[in-house]
Amino acid sequence: MATHTMKRSVRRVLTATVLSLGLVVLPTVQAGADPVFTDPTDSMAELGELSRQSEQTNEALLNAQIDLEAKQSAQREAEAQATADQDLLDAARAQVDVFRPAVNQLATATYQGARTSRLFALMSSDSPQQLLDQMSLLDVISKDTSNQVAQFWSATEDASRAAEASKESADAARAAAEQARAVSDDLQRKQSDLQAQIDGVLEAFGNLSAEERQQLAGTPFPPGVDPATILAHLTPGAGSSALQAAMTRIGDPYSWGATGPDRFDCSGLVVWAYKQVGKNLPRSSQAQANGGMPVSRDDLQPGDLVIFYNDASHVGLYAGDGNIIHASTYGVPVKVESMARMPFYGARRY
Image 1 (tube, rainbow, N blue to C red):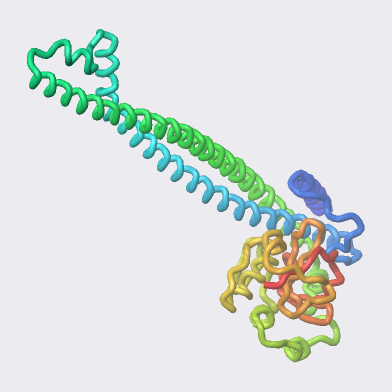
Image 2 (tube, helix red, strand yellow):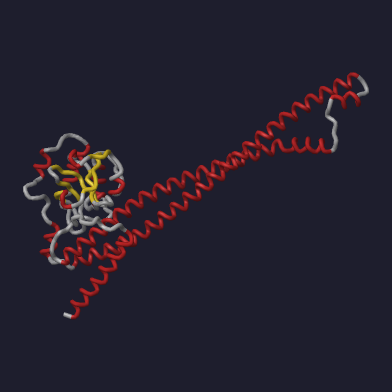
């Protein structure tokens, strides 16, 4: 008796810890929203709450992974641009160095009082031929020097622009790296939170009786609905084909982060079903809620994605007659269920 009491006390402490972690990481579940489970027993209610929070964290984790991949891609592009801009800057500076000696020589000669005018050539010539030769040489020197000076200033301006571009791209690369690190840190935190919440769910599930587990799993279809009813209303199209694929997974278990072929989380089932018809969908329910084409609740067609909760943390495929097929939560296999059990967020067609 004492051992049983101690186990219940430990379980309540662990549950409270997991709940506090979930509240730090995730937004509060929508006030007044129907929970995934409505069973009256304390153990079922506890499992339902823990499972809901773990699903939120799981989808937030998947979304963070998508964000990290995007940030890392941006970082690679920024670093490549920074390298290219630095190469352009080096080339521009090398071009400046080509013309710098001639400009320096001209500046030195001018400072020392060198004479490069036609008057000086006239005064210093001993014969008409020498005068012509000196004037011709001065024309060449003047033209060549003028060209070199012009090219020097052009190269200097190019180097200045290249330096500015190089600084901007280097700054962008540093900023992209910092963003990627921040997202990576957030990802690791969410992974830690999810594992803690999973441990809480598994412990709560372990405390259910066999009868409660059966009640939790439920039946594959709502009363009066069978596969033939669903398939009879399908029309050709990617959505209908994806729904048919998902129907073959009825009975498969829920598993956090899984995309099949024989276990799934909610967005993983959607990804797997559409992959069978050649379409690659985003990995998280939040990302899926931002893709495709928006669809009103009254215009739903079989295979459309139906997203739930105010944080878009759950998703299923519309199966007709107000039902969806989804991987709902731990302990519940893939099944067809009424979408009225959860607060509607939106729908998308891919």
